[in-house]
Length: 154
Image (cartoon, rainbow, N blue to C red; front, top):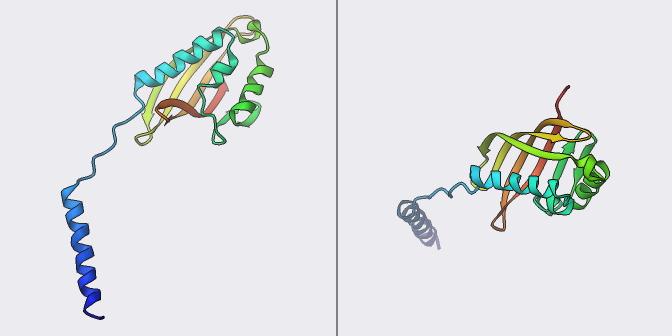
């Protein structure tokens, strides 16, 4: 029995060594490009400006991990986020015309990115401010996992 343990250990070590040298780790390509991130924001702008708040919220991840942090506090999940937007922007006049400007996109591993940007709403109640989004690749799509939006000081 004692001779079997060293032989078994040597076999395992040999297998680990040959696996490590025969198959070098290839890093997974970065899934969230600037073009894909901009595509999400472009879709949001089009949906918002068309008055499609459910479509706008559909660009976010539909799961309990979704968080939105703004001036009214923390919102979790897409249903609560949609209710938040419907309450804050009940009419086309309240929504105004939205535009975004991407300031920076930083990879956070192969499937996540941090996007920093600026928003502007023109209309009856104009506003502007800044946001940070954690984007994630989920089921082949780029979605927003976390949104922190702050109005700019006037």
